Length: 221
Image 1 (cartoon, one colour):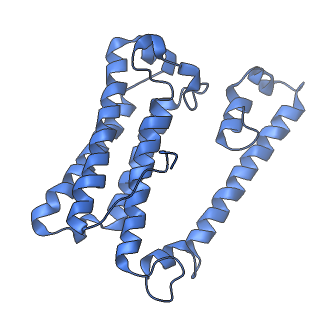
Image 2 (cartoon, rainbow, N blue to C red):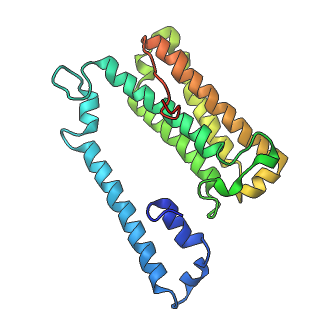
Image 3 (cartoon, rainbow, N blue to C red):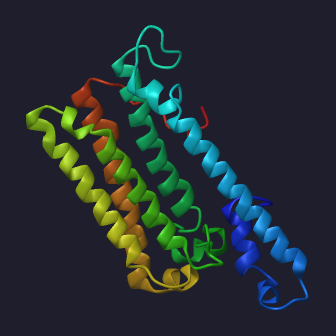
């Protein structure tokens, strides 16, 4: 079990012995949970500040040029952003989802699923794709596509929306979802959606921009 982060906070709230939080006999657990939550808040604030400061990442990405230490031109900036989408989709599909969804039911590992204790696995998957969609819309990459390729951006948004809807339709504990053929089919459909998105972004969109997306960070290269 993680010592910090959301995984640690989930264990404090939903793991073995969590029922003691309702009493007065385990003040350490309450104090530890408060410390974990405070640390998460601090890290989130630091990331926000690093993103928003005048010479922060957002400014560097939006203003490529010869004096920029990260991005010398627009192609480098766009390639970086496309890589974020591709790697995030790979992470969602190959780590978050296939980490517990086996090729066959007897290979499933429900306790490998993120947030299985709090029954938030599917909600987390939905949130992952929702975040990608928000970033894609905010980046306005779709607006930069040629008129005859606008369908690519529209398809990306539609597939992201479909993925969110699919994940949100999977209720309850993930072990019960895996045991239910209809819900398990939805998890497999979610995997197909992420694969389709990888193709749309990593092949179709990059081709329109004349970019090479590069390899996934999960390849181990």
